[in-house]
Length: 334
Image (cartoon, rainbow, N blue to C red; front, side, top):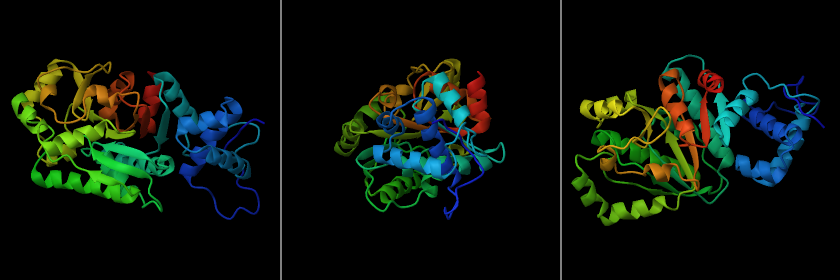
């Protein structure tokens, strides 16, 4: 059997239409299985869902009229574009969302909603989630999630110290606590600044037993949820009292930095930028962020961040990307 999407609609007897996100997942599973010949266990591993669910999704694809003779993605579903970006950059998965505008006010809620559905779909139990809380898209993600009926994660661990004024750092703690509540996990907070004034200050802080315990938890992470930052601070960081000085930004810019993940900066080819600033960051190292043992999910969009997003993909800083269609089309074409 071959596959198709977006037929005339569900067969008689189906009471409600699947959501756009569910249609996207049905279509992706159908294409992998019927067109690319990927076996069900491989699909389950690639999409981080159970094999019984893959089987159910394939059956649902038939009922929904998706599996017929060709694949025609439903409106708002961009599986071909997602596949093009996946293949070009060697990613595990790409999720492309439509956003009704070019500014952050329109893009961020769409990205957050898509990331929330992704987490609700792929968190099946046992994960230890690392989260860099300083991202507008991650705030939107957690705000869009609904509580899980059962525990789907063991820990939610802060992987970067606070950045900004005390009120903003408290907001980060609430975000991590909220994600822990939603997933039934234990929150693990890092009660230190993300960027300190000197290397000696960092050495002192990492000797603190509370800090060292959190750093030990980083080695147990299975999922990393991050935003992708541009060199220019986001509105959220600017409002919160961004700790990156103009002098620090100039140093990074002079060394070719275009973006960061967890304050680990990289150049246009995704190579880490080594500087004295890097030695003052209290958070995951570049090697830890890029670890093959992690499922690293980057949530970012908007052309303002295009150079940073592309560099993050080239440098293999993430293996799952959730972004908007405009950025995805540019990525596929470059």
